[in-house]
Length: 247
Image (cartoon, rainbow, N blue to C red):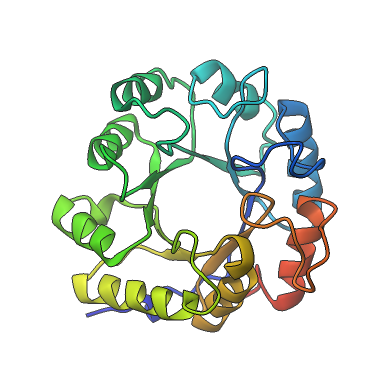
């Protein structure tokens, strides 16, 4: 059986905005123009993989093709962008699937949270549309769902992301997730990240494991020393200083 340690990466993905509001951090990019500026800034320091939550005209997260395509239109040719399909963006599962069916342009990937209702239907829809899948794993139960789905070999990568993990038990949680993925024989590449206070702890653990990771204002507003980051570029540079994004 192959293990997570066989999937050595160190790719650094920039998660630029998530659901962070401008009143939470003035530097979070919510418009296509602001995202374009962050794409360019990150590309200049060697980061070309991005995870974005497109917004509508008033700054709300959106799955509508008009809003997704507005961001795709400003993605530089050398950049690769994926988006979220999280339940909180569109809680109605039928409307969520309908929005995704309307996606007509070329999108590299979309993340699907296995712990959310309708996740497997979304994954099958993405397979049909030829869009890469990042499967978000929050719990060991999510690993079981993935292993039984018949879709594990269709993934672009697994996102090992213990949602709202406390610093005290974040490392034990991700160890359990990796063990469960190994036991289930899930062979897709892994990207591990945290959020909030556990962000930097889990990023450094991902580096020790030799797997991909991510950083950005979606996950944390603060640098490793606790200072408020000016924006995504400062977070990316801090992650690179720790070794993220290298071979």
